[in-house]
Structure formats: C-alpha cells, structure tokens
Image 1: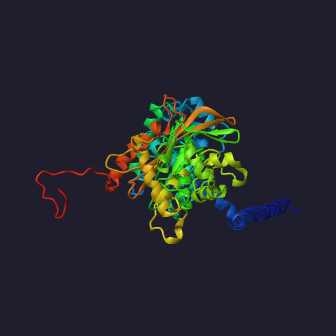
Image 2: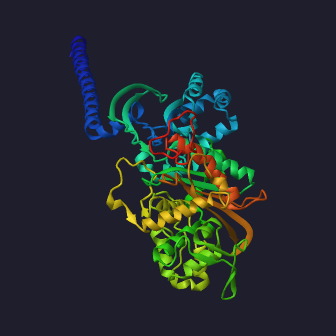
Image 3: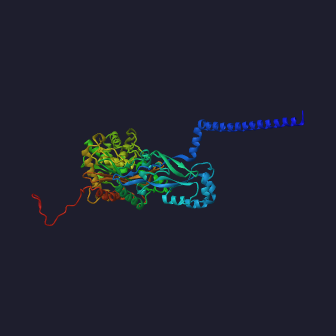
Length: 584
C-alpha cells in the first residue's frame, strides 16, 4: 500500500474517532444531567411526601407560633359594687436566650434597666442557652417595660399579664387573701373561689422573626375569657369602721391580736370581718403566717360570760324561772370546786344575773335542767360545727358530749368554760338571739333573693328570747358591765365576757376580752362580736377593752345603713299644741 493510501486510512480513522468521542461525551453529559435532575425530583418528592409534616413543623417553629393571650381575673366587689380586688395590666420582660447571649456587651445596660445586677442577669440565663423563653422580670408597670424595650436589645421582649391589686390594702386582707405571681389564689376568698375568679387564657397564631419578635398576627384561635366577678355580702364602709376601731383597741391595750364580725341578723349576711395584726397584700414580701391568719374563723376560744344569755333562755323556757325570780349568788361548792363571782351580789333576780354577769346565778339555772338540754342548745346554735361559709381553714371549735361533762363540767358550760368556739360562731349564736330564736345560715356572698321558710330553723322560743334581750339591755347601763358599748340614739343589748387563756394545758393570768351585742335592741338588725387577745394595758375585762369597739363601730354603721334610732330623747317644743286627750 502506498504512503498516500496509508495516510488516507489514518485520517479516516481519526475523523471516525472524533465523531464517536463527541457522541459519547454528549451522551455522558446528558446522562449525568438527567440523573441529577431525577435525583433532585426524587428528593423533592421524598421531602414533600414523606417528610412533609416534619419540615412543616420545623418551618412553623421558626416563623409561625401559637402564643397565649392572658385573661384577667374576675373582680371581687362589696355588696354595693365597690371594688375590693381588681386585676391591673402589667408587662413582664422575657428573653430569647440564643439571641441575648450574643449581646453580652449590652448586659450592663439591660441589668440597670431591670434593676438587677449583671451577675443576677447572668444567673437567670446560665444553662438556658437552648431555651426559647426565660423570664427576666415579672409584673412591671407598662411604662417601665417600654423603657426597657426602647434599648432595642435583640432577644428581649415584653408580655402582657395581670397583677392583683387590693384598693383597701390591709383592711380586708385576711378575708380576701391574695394571689401569687401567676395570679392564682393562695389564701382567703381568692383561694376559696379561685376556679370562679380565674380567667381562661386565649391563644393566637402569630409570625415571628428570627429574633423572636412578633411581626404579624395570623389568626385568633381562642378568645380569652375573663374570670367571673364575685359580689360579697361585705359592706366596704362597715369593714373600714370595724377595722379602724379594732386596730385602735389592739394598739391602745397593747394586745397581741384581735378579731371582730358584723352580721345582718335579718339575712345572715356577714357585713364585716376584720382582724389584727394585718399585712398589706399588695406587698407580698411583707406577708407571713401571723399576718395572714383569719382569726375570726381559725382561732377558737372559751367564750366566758358572753355565753350566759343562752342558759338563761333555757331556764325561762322551762317555766322554772322568770325574770323576777330571786337567786342567792353566794359562792357555791360543786365537789372540790367553788363557783364564785367577782363580787358577792347576794340575792338578786335573774335580770341582774345577766347584768352583773353572775357565774353562780347562771350555774344554778343550768343545773336545774338536764345537761343534755344545754348541750343540744349549743349544738343548735352551731357550736362545734363549721358555719358553712366555705372559707378554707375554718375551725369547728370543741363541744364535748354532755355525757362526759360531770356536774362541774355542766356548771362550766353555763358560764363559758370547758368548750371553745370561733368569734364567727359567737356572732352566729347572737344572730339567733337577734332573730327571736330563729337560726339563719351565714353567708359571705350577697343574697340576691330573700331567705325562705326552708332556710330558717327555730332553736329557741321567741318569748324567752325577747325577755333575755331585755335583760341584756341592762348590761349596757351604769348598773351593768357593758356601759362602754352604748350607742347614742339606739338601744343596745349585749353581753361582756372575760376568759383566761390556756397555755400548755393550764390556765394562766392572761386573758381574752370579749363583747357581743346587737342594735337597735327594739328590732335587732346588726350583730357584732369582738375579741381582744391578751390586752396588756392594765385593764383586761371585756366591758373595758372590747365593748368600746362595738360602740365606735355601731354608732356610724347604724347611721350609714339609715336604721331608725329607737332611743331618742323626747323633745319639748316651745309653743307646741298638745294632742287632744294628752295629759298636761
């Protein structure tokens, strides 16, 4: 083969190789492109179909969130609609740690605005690098929170909340109780009616940016439901009057504590419930156990002479005794015990047994009847059982079975020893005296409907009760032990009491001073019971220490409620023409 032929063949082979190589490369490239596209489509399908929910959740976590919308707590109102507890809007400052941790150079300024030290701020964030939400400061005034937000520190935000506020501060603190920082009831009515008062938070879906800031509200998921309002039987005006008088008595007599209750005898509504000492629930840091105890329902006492009207009622009901029956009150012996009075009053009638507060006289009345009758009367009055007003922590007191009394126990129960009750139970018992022997249920909630026959229970004869009320009016005279309970313009029926304190199972020379009474005595409307714990100012008798609280409170309360006076002096008007038939 010639050299030219060989060259021609080689050239042909080179051209064929170039054509085959270009085709293969093009095929390879197209194959790779198609494979990549197919892989991408497969991956997209995999992500969209298989992992759709996971990826959607991850995206929503970064941008679409569901946040809580606070609901304010229901108001607590007095019987006239005056606020006793309200929820005020406040702002709480919170942080998104992953962002705030990148802003360490801004921490000193943030700490200053929060009124904490940089070390305290660092402690709040320590170990929470992956958390989405951390409180930095709770319940700031909206203006203070706005000043913090104006620092424009990434990861720092505000959240609207509500804080409980008590307009009357310590005046009603034991009754109302208080809420914690999350607005949940902790004591008193706030705890008892927490389910009713607490609102139901709402929720909404929002869009947040990468710094956690809400940039858009998407939709409302649940509308917040505010808590229900609670309307009490308490009259804010009477609550203040009773509190002021009680606090004055406790301070002036250097007493350890005190408590008082006012009840509307016609409806059973509690109009005031006050205690000393007291704390301000608007400042939780001040509150401790001694300032939180509602002594009107938690502390029990031997009632002393305040119980004496009830054995006398039994005596009159029995027919063995009348208001004019005479009784020798010289000291009497019962076994190895001697029953005596502060003074030997000699022979006196039953009216003076009450007005002079004779232990001997009331003992002889009680011993003339079976012990079971006195025990049953006390039970019917509510002694030894809670009143049913619903407050958490209420005590029932102690009333032992009559079979365990023995004769001296029978005597002790006649003049207020050997059993115990709360000051609320004493007010309840005196409400029965005021209601002509009918017991009506007590309540702390305003009655919207009048009581019916099924709500009332007769426990004493009306005629006997009226006779004893007349005797109790003699207590509040110069001849009785309770003159300092008198109220100008009104007739008052009441009874003083002084009982020894028991410490470590033994009676001491420390005392409780008590007074319980009602006004106007001609048609009783208001009942008040007071106890002063351990007065140390020299005097310790109920008529000296507790009776003035009644007078100072009732004098204004009766007029505020526009209750007609029943003891106004007859006025002689010059030139007045006498009525026909009137004697000159």
